[in-house]
Length: 189
Image (cartoon, rainbow, N blue to C red; front, top):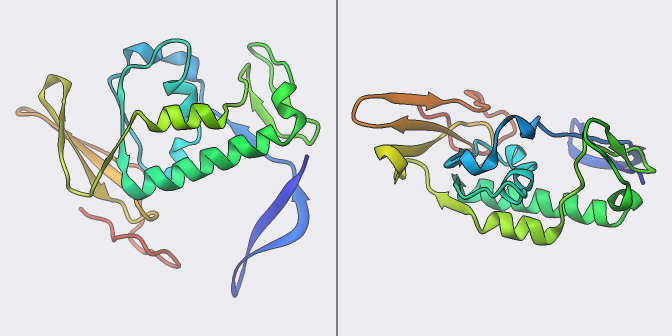
């Protein structure tokens, strides 16, 4: 099934009566064994949409997912909306095999070789999420201190520092110095 298209207008965001065939392109998740991942750092809510494929995979993810409170909430809503949309279409029953893209009758693509996740998997995924405030550090395996900093991209979006007694590394996600029509905290450098 097709879904309404959102579009930006000079006076704000509106939804018109047209429809759009969407694509959900997930990363090549088979490149990394989820059982070997200790920590996932989420930079913004868009980056959470494929999270159930990692945390709820048969490979046995045993790590932790770190993000900010707003990112966790917006990401959860996005994943649940996606799962609800998929459940309401015939897409959930479309068989797919490794290497081919599964396509619903409305043209929504997911793949290759992936079945859509369910609301129950989203809730199980969210049980693995640790929510932090900006500038709140958490210590992890190997003596690393992980800290989120406001990136200015969206509400709750974060860049991260990963530091130990010898090294400090910055992980930069989408960032913005000019929050036009946005209301996040400004970029912290």
